[in-house]
Length: 465
Image (cartoon, rainbow, N blue to C red):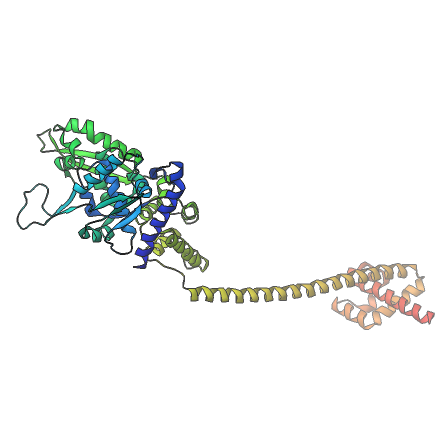
């Protein structure tokens, strides 16, 4: 119920806003950058033999009725707004009154009698006036709709989306009549075989005036199909069938149709919401077929509901709960009206804050460890550099001593604990090692040169003291 209220309130507010923006500049409703329409009950496709302007008047009246939350005895709106909704550009009020009278004289007749059979007593048949009392005064129009029709106007179970932006563009009665009748079949892509006389009846007087099909086709039918393809959101084609294999007389027509795969028609069905359109197309990869489904459900799937589905899908993507087809997931969220519970949103925010705090703490620990490691590495490098310098100086000092002093240093090193340990580790015999052996062996030369440096340094300190 809440969805229906939102759907019926939003188009009314939007259409008034568009009227206020476009009317002062003389822009008609068919040039609207946003979609304006309502879910029209399939029963109203049975309206026949009515002019284009009269059909527009009924569309405008039923659009206004469809937006009201409940049933009313009458409906009262600004006349200029009403005329804009029905794309009535003329200031000829005599003609407008004539159009209103035409509508008041028109009836909608509903029956369950098959079109190719005569009515029976048991058959259902209902005939209802399309519009009741209408009054115009002081720049406003007030009209009544028969109570029997109100529930059908507001019933969206068996309905189709009717765009006033599109229907107001038609100039041929036959085009409008055919368009009305095929709209409920667009999701199926094809109609059943329809008797030619039924289609003639759709077209009203223009259809009945041409008894021969080729003239009906030339003067009425083909121009209507061309206008539908030119002005509407549908690509329409048809095929014919004869009475029998041996006959050349055409007595059946079957229509094939599909929504146009154009960004303009899809964007219009999104009420001109460019950001929504780009998010659906570029971020989620919504397909043309899915866009068509969205277009056909715009009476309930408002901008707010689409945005809600987008936010829900993004939320689940961030949680890693969508593993395939984000577009398909979004469509399900749209159909089932999913939304992120506020409690869950708060819970996720708290968990994210906690995780962020843990990340900051872990980063601080890693930084401290790296700093300690860097300090250790710097000290190790300093020690290695100092040791290398000691070895270099020790070697230079050793080479500067006389033979006796060098012999004493060699003997002192070989009997020192450090010298004994290294010689043992290298599996050498200290008794057989000479000065040349010490200086030619890399490990022994390094350790011996450092020993010489430290021994010489220690003696120098003692001499100074």
